[in-house]
Amino acid sequence: MTRRQQIADAAIETLAAAGLRGLTHRAVDRAAGLAEGSCSAYFRTRQALLQATLDRLVELDTADVIALPEMSGDSPEERAAEAAMLAIEHWTTKGRVRMLARHELCLEATRQPELRAALQTAAEVVRQPIVDLLAAAGIREPAKRAHLFVACTEGIILEHLTGPAGLDLDPSELHAALRGLMSAFST
Image (cartoon, rainbow, N blue to C red):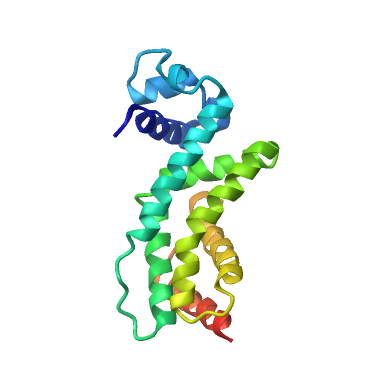
């Protein structure tokens, strides 16, 4: 791991724990266990730090999507639903910190056009493996459907992570909902 990746990982952790107000160069130095000034030596401005954080999120999220194991469902739609379940499970457990950090960036992007543009570009990169998954499932207009599919799964993840009561992700109910979504895309 490079020093830049180490700093970006610490920025992700800081964002998830303290939000954007808590994301300072000093806080990232502390989270990374580095000497004060290290973060600012690599990322001079807050915008540069935000961009590095977003770039690292894209790198890690893309790797997660690509690393999904081959699904064993009876149909391509079933396999796509299984892959979505695995992704949701991952992003609400092991990937929870990254997901919280990404949502912090998404909220900030509503106020910063430059960050919004960067997030849109990043979303296209991360969405491509999902487009490929939907295309393999025989879904018509996979690029268009991938956007809706991501929005639906993001809603499930967001409610689970931040909802007042959380969301009990019963696997059988979740699988049925995702399978229904796949079926709706197929018609």
